[in-house]
Image (cartoon, rainbow, N blue to C red; front, side, top):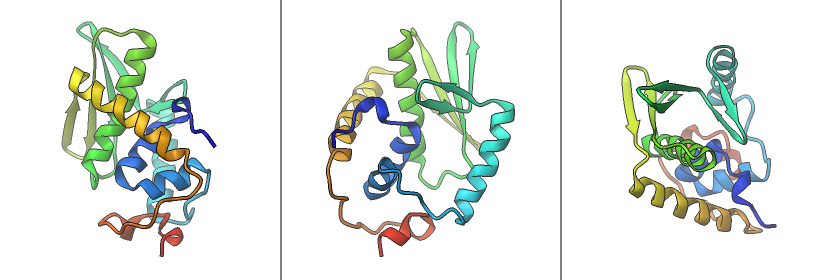
Length: 165
């Protein structure tokens, strides 16, 4: 199986930055426990966001986009920031994809979780990082066998943990 970069989504980038095994399972449409508290909360938030801001584009589904002072700002709302890096990578993926596909000059992003706001820029270093990450993910997700379990602090609250222990 060859996994094309066009099939990569923001959720998949987030999962990959958190746990490669979780990303591999998700890429195969293996579903997490649907009774998991985080999954249920995510569904409720998705329903609320869909009625408020949700902006789908291609295979992207982010929360909000706005134009301000000649540039675009993408906003992602998160219930928690347990994995801040994964949230940043997901947002950077949206920025990277939109900027490249729509030839935008400048696009920024921010993640909002409670009172915390994290800004993500479309600078060349971030773009290089995302390009490398997408190539790495495409190769990794093309493997036939899932990676071995690597326990982390995220395992306890993961809805996929039934597939790992």
